[in-house]
Length: 416
Ligand code: B12
Ligand code: SF4
Image 1 (tube, protein in one colour):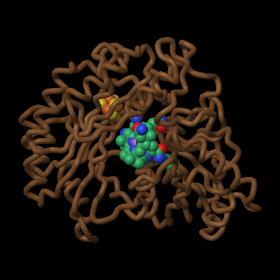
Image 2: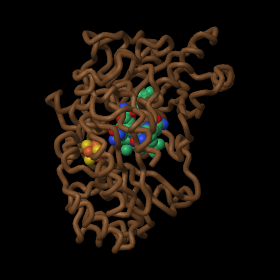
Image 3: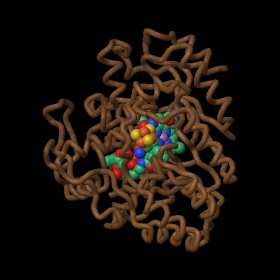
Image 4: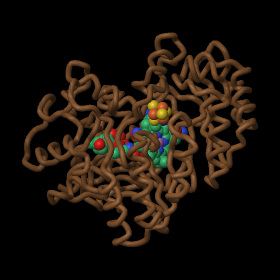
């Protein structure tokens, strides 16, 4: 089978495309299928897509969806289906498709949805299509064909052992100058109420089977780095893991082994509660040059009561200090416009920012991602507009009707 993955670029083209397809491509290539990726902007003319698809001639199209990509994907896939004389089957997967499967399947042009982890499901699916089998609901774990709760598929167990996953197909990403992206784990054990990433953990918790959260062995991670080095340049590693600094014995052992293995500079994401002075020292010695922390808000109340992130401002300030002293560049990520947030609390975020003085920061207006606890709260309390799926998710403009702050107030604070 010749499989084409569509990468829908939204406001900007990210340096790395979706990671999921890079794993899926590696998985199906192992048994002889072909895979490639086509990047297309959400606003591209349909004719560009049609032309490219006709040239490539895929037997199957796969599209990985975040909530940001969903509207663009809908337009493009829909247009493709209307234009092509001989339709190519299309399957969608990823976090948005997993938590909005019915809306995704309702798009004319999307024929199948993959819920949850994709490696096994996609392999069986491709093999079945290749064998000429008609895919129906219930035939393949994780694969849904017809919209509706009653058609929800059984979830197969997460792929085990995780070390047996093939390394990502790096030609599916957009890596240059030896700057590479790595995943050492799947899942995150924390309960942040706004986070879509952790919802896979919860999805699999409900199956009674093995948990989604697991980590590769250090040898396996180093073997992937060796393979990259063997194939070209390796100058910087960006660890994409949600929270790299969990499982402390693993992290300490990794720091030793990584340093002994060449210690290429690297960056990672962390939560302040998961690091200590000792850990920062070890990470710095191993080559860590940059840490991104989720600070989210300057209001301890909001973090504790609404976000389930109980760290204090003092703790955050201390960890920022330690990180900077270790010579590590530090980025803070913030959110604004959460349910229950007041104008004073928005101001508290700016105040905390001035106190911790990160080297860099990212700031995003809160968007309620389907599946999350705050999505349900916003829907139940009437903050979520009926047509939320029709409204683009973007960084600046809230889609919510909140009681405490208006959209304009949030946008003004965003601009400040
Ligand atoms: C790395 C990363 C990025 C990278 C790469 C993006 C990507 N989609 O992989 C970059 C830097 C580009 C990025 C950007 C952004 N990201 Co980001 N990112 C992540 C992160 C931390 C890890 C993703 C990852 O490596 N996963 C590992 C792979 C193996 O898992 P996976 O993607 O789920 O794929 C598996 C299955 O979903 C399935 N699958 C996936 N695609 C497909 C397709 C088919 C056809 C099939 C069959 C199956 C399938 O099979 C895969 C293998 O098991 C996740 C958090 C997370 N843990 O998911 C957030 C996350 C995906 N990002 C998120 C967001 C919001 C953003 C941004 C908007 C930034 C921001 N403001 O927060 C932008 C928007 C990007 C976009 N184009 O839409 C949200 C998305 C929530 C949602 N419902 O949409 C997440 C979940 C984090 C969160 N806030 O909760 N991100
Ligand atoms: S720590 Fe980060 S990845 Fe984990 S649940 Fe919270 S926001 Fe999500």
